[in-house]
Image (cartoon, rainbow over all chains, first blue to last red; front, top):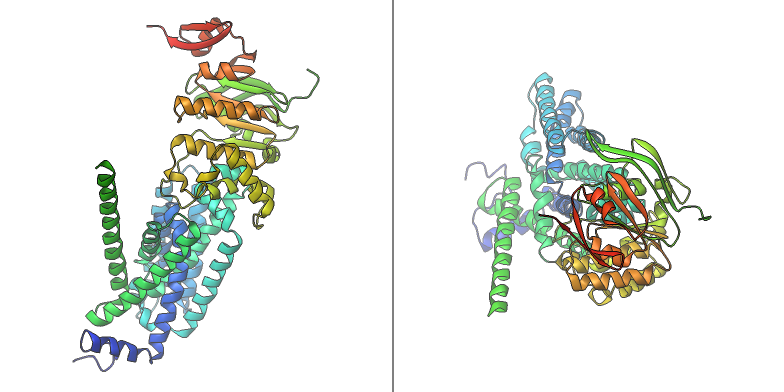
Length: 297
Length: 252
């Protein structure tokens, strides 16, 4: 098996033997890191994804994710960790999109389009200006959960803790904000500041997820688990717990499938989530039709 | 009238770009008024409520609510909007929505406490929705939702209640129930209700204002056909119960 020697996590056979190999693989540090990264990603995207889906700001999130590429480029250019560059760029672009939407007459999708494209273009220019070759560029674009270094795990842990803290403290405020902004304004909720803080949390989530599925596929983990969870509950807290659970199942299952089928892990995680969501939506449609027929009979 | 007005609008002008919505509108609302604002669609009725709430800033004119600016006065004001654009699938129960009304009492970063829950229970019982508290808000009928939103406005213990077309999405039996509910509230509250349903409004409210960009009339509810014609800018036919207009029809 060519190449297996330097890629020890590649299984040789599917099925039970492969699964055993997967368990064996857990002994490797990179595999443990991958699982921790997956869990942290699931928590971040599970919680923030609920707001993204419920408040219908999936494409604002997409814009923030893509604009963060500018930061990755800047990281290479300055010779610092590209993830730190991405953190600053995604925060700045999130606040910029929010500010434009709130304060100007520019339509939201125009603002998203501008930030999305300009961020990516800046990234390309920075990388072109950086002498030499940009190592690991593909892993930032498409994710590389198996090579997440420990230092980045620590950063992810901090970001996830910030997200949990903010949502725990402002849960009732964000419920009002997602449900009915006009009422929130009338009731005295600081709507605009909380909206910008939500975009900042999305920016942090993007940074957590870049490691797992890559910035181009981030939007999937922000959407699929929450959309799955929404079918099973009408309580926002329950939805968050379920969404974290689905996020973890997708990450773990996708990782295992990619190991079995020797496919890139980020894309496999996304495809597993997409297929599961499609099947589950189809099933709930069927169930609804069945109930309607039964009621009519 | 010696009491100072709760709401005092003076010479208000509002326009959306080139389109005027309110022209030189003045209005005084006094304590324990039950005021109905009628007028055609697009006549600026909702805009007027939003000016009182401070959601829309008038280009000219002054607004005072409880002697303060509209923003400062918001904690005394309950508001039920005309339309809600939330998803049917939104993950919130009736209970969650009514508790939102306690935000102005609880404030930021504080959890709802026992008193908040007791008030929410009371308000839900008042609108007859206590037994439905666990249901998802988007799955209720239009009338049930309307009652939940009224309950949400009431739990904030407002002194002034602003209702924008509260009966637009509910059927006529429910409308009667809804007006009975308002009857019960009007002794303890000042109510301003916007509606294009002249018949229902004139039966229930104590004072009427006719608004079509300009204020055509404002006072006790015995209005004449001439005023209604001026407001709606078309001939109206009144079938009167005494002096109370009951129905308005366009003349063909």
